[in-house]
Every structure is written in structure tokens, then in C-alpha cells.
Length: 306
Ligand code: ASP
Image 1: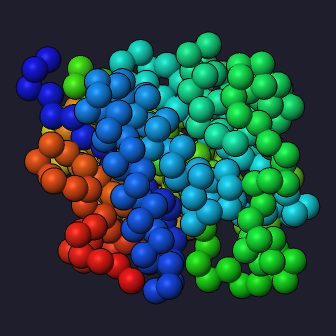
Image 2: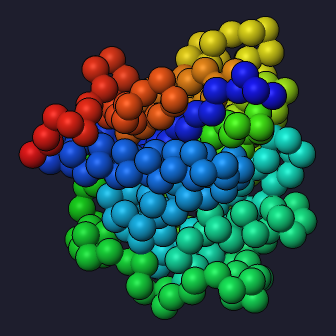
């Protein structure tokens, strides 16, 4: 396939982004899109691109994934992540894991091993046995999240899930999503992020999608698969993404967002939260286009953000 136009899009969650956090959201999403784009440029597979981009977001406390994750009812961090390969419909997921520095890498390894959702101690053992970076479970608790939890503060700038979808030079699509879950969630809760069809979907015949938002609302409308199915009539990914969010609003309550890439490399996203951090990169651009609101012009790295 020599007419494939490789592309990557990442999100840093559907949420309300306060003015003082806009620059950090832009910078994090831009860095993730650049990291993924570099892997694409060096001939990496879509799954490798997704892992590379999400690892950047997981390392950034601005986002609710790995370091900086929101705390559960017990004051702990429990992480969910999943990956899907559009060529084979292969998938892998981990849920409620602690002390795994990059849950997206664990999900990728599970996918390469055999498709399944591994949770808690079993997932942690799998990560350890496969040589992934482990850490003390407390090491993923950021000072800001701990203070908010301790004070039970009203979380205005609720951190949110991260995700990425990519189309590589061979025409393969992949999707990945990683999260610390919802603020104060019950210990052991696993949301949409770990569930294929809900938190992510990838099928080379149509497109790939990663979602963010209220898991308990995303699950019953199978948000990612709803967006991908809407591509079947040739609709633009923007329209498919909006259709998925409209379906969520019609059928259940809740906030969500999704990013969509189709097999031609066309890009789209939609959300019903106030803001959503997004960055994308294609060969037509000299640098990633970065947004926290879709209706505003993209922010360019060359224009200094103070
Ligand atoms: N979707 C994630 C969950 O429900 C959280 C989020 O995106 O805010 O676990």
C-alpha cells in the first residue's frame, strides 16, 4: 500500500481545563504526538507508535494515567490500559494494576502474548515476568492528587484518561487507552478503558478510536465501536465521532470524548465536556496541531506559550 498517509492523534482526556493548565495540556499532547510521529517516521508499527505516544502521557503528571493518576476511595492508584491492533483484531488489556510504571506497555505485551484482560496481582506478575518497569505503588501518587484526595477538594480540573490512535505506512491501524480511572472510584473498579469496543477499537477495514469520559456511560453505548461503525458509510471521522457522542447523550447521561482515525488517515474527534486536549500529526504538517477546544485554532509550538 503505497498511497497510505500515516497519521497519529492523541488525547489527554475530555475534561474542564483551567487556564493555568492549558499550556501543560498542550505541551504534553504535543510531546506525545511528536514521540509517536518519530516512531512512525522510522518505520514503526501502529502498535509501537501508540505505545510510544501513550508512554509520554503516562509520564506526565498533567494527565490521569500512571504518574499523576486520580486516587481511589482508599487513596491508592489503580490503573487500566488496553491496546488493539486493527490488522488482526488482536487486543490486550490490564485492569486495577498497581506499581506498573507503564500500563500501556503491559497491555501491548499481553496483546502480543494472547488476547485477554489481566487484572490486579495477575497483571502485575505478568508485567514483572515480562521485564516491564515496576515501581512502588506509592511512586505513582502525585503530591497534587494526594492533597486533593486528603482535602476532598472539589476537583475543577478533573484529570482524565489518555489515548492514541495511529495509522502506519503499511495501512495498519492501532488504538490504545490508559487511565487512572475516576476520582474516588471504589477499589477494584475497572471502567471502559480496559474494555474493547468501549474504551478503544481498531479495525483496518474501517478505522480506530480511543475514548475518554464517564466509564459507566461509555460502556452501555459501546462508544468506540459505535464511532467505528459510523464510518461504514464513508462518513468523515469527525461525523462518526460526533455520532458516537450524540448517541451517548441521547441514551445515557455523562461526559465523554473520542478521537477517530479512518483507514485513509482522515482525522476526527468530538466531546461533550467543556474541553478536550488533542494533538495530531500528519505528513502535511510541519509540527503537531494542538487543541484544548476544537472550535479554536490549533496552537503552534513556534508561538511561545507562557
Ligand atoms: N473513562 C475512564 C474510566 O471511566 C476515566 C476517564 O476517562 O475519565 O475509568
